[in-house]
Amino acid sequence: MQTKKIVLDGNSLHMADIVALVSDPDVTVEITDHARSKVKKSQDFLLRELNGKIIYGINTGFGPMASYIIGPEHLVELQYNLIRSHAVGIGNPIRSEYVLAAMLVRLNTLAKGYSGVSPELLEQLCLFINNRIIPIVPEHGAVGTSGDLVQLAHIALALIGEGEVIYQGKRRAAKDVLSELTIKPHALNIKEGLALINGTSVMTGIGAVIIAESERLLSVATHFGALALELVHGFKDGISEGLHAFRPHHGQITIARSMRELLASSQLLRSRKIFIGKEQINGDVNQIPEDVQEIYSLRCIPQILGPVLDTLLCAKKVIETEINAVTDNPIIDAEHEHFLHGGNFHGDYIAAAIDQLKMTLVKLTLLSERQTNFFLNRKVNRHFPPFLNLNKPGLALGLQGLQFVATSTAAQSQTLAFPQYVHSIPTNGDNQDIVSMGTDAALLTAKVIDNAFVVLAVELVTLAQAVDYLAEEEKLSQSSKKLYEDLRAILPVIREDRVITAELQKIVGFLRIHKQFLAKNE
Image (cartoon, rainbow, N blue to C red):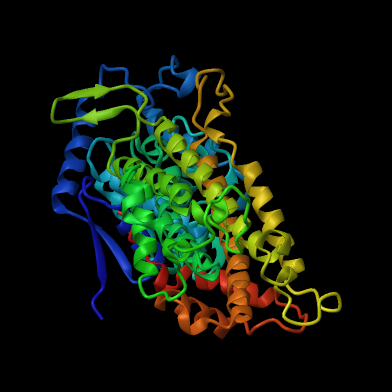
């Protein structure tokens, strides 16, 4: 089997490459010769120009201590001190796939050749990535300016043979794993500690992974919305091309088109023609048995999921740009022979984009919860049995308990929806007086995504139960019928009350990996 390789030149890394790396253990990375040459030129320029110049973080202290000039004999020690002093995170380790993504983004940034590091440092990162040596990175510690200093310091710590890593599923001391694999701890050079920890690579790496998960979530929600519309024998004009052309938002039009494609083979949708020949308006008031319009959670799916798609595409563009950006400080520009001091490490672009996405994903979650409520609440749907109880109401409880899961999980996400981006608290002796909180924004969005999958899993159980009640499986669209059949392979129809917790976990897993939900949201 041919090994899949991601070849890095610093300029052409894509989000899809990051997703491939964290999803497939056979994917490896390597640096192009051109990138390696550019990295060497940057380091040579730095070493050549160092004498007689004051360059932040290279022969000065850091942050508020930048006015302290460091003698030549202490410049390497300074870099070790930086890593060790900042590797102070606490809390649960963030997911291994997020750390791996962050390492790849940092490697690509260094490969651009503007950080003044050695080619050997890049090779060390390649070895860690290719051997899936994943540093332990605690969740708490980043404010997202000067980059992800604390979290990246834990990655850097492992590269120099200190700290802990996950290797082959086990948490171990980094030095023991390196010894076992005959990999030498990296010996830091001037500027390398700063180059490793000064940037947005953690929030960007997490962002790349959760963008892919968000695309899947949106696909799942669109499929479920289509099935829900079938189960109420919804009207075709609500997703018609003509309707949405009058309000030409890209996301709304795209979601409506996706729903039409999913429902093309359905025999359950209705046309407005059913009202032709109904009671005439003659001055009296007459009631007809049909609902003229569906409830909003069924009628307005494109209008609600459309903004999710538009926000997702915007966030994706921001992440793709950041992946191939120079985000450390100072920038070593050997080509133009100068040093640039600035703030490219500030994470506001990522924080703003991810928080906007998080907000829309919470709305997606609420849409799912409301659709579930519609089918379980007979006072609203006026057709299905209470809680889709297919047994003896009162004696059996149907999906009553399951609704609590959706309600409580959606409520938690509502709390998490508040933007972390605006939670700026000055720190670092007020040197970092306005910060991004980008990494926490990304981690909280990841939690919202986890919650959304739970709520959607509850909805799928509900929709399948509704299919069983109607006994119209053969009239479903091909897409909805496959959804129903796949769900029933995991969870048989619920007639007798029973514990289904383990099956619910399997359904969540099914939603996360099933090929039917591959996104087509461009």
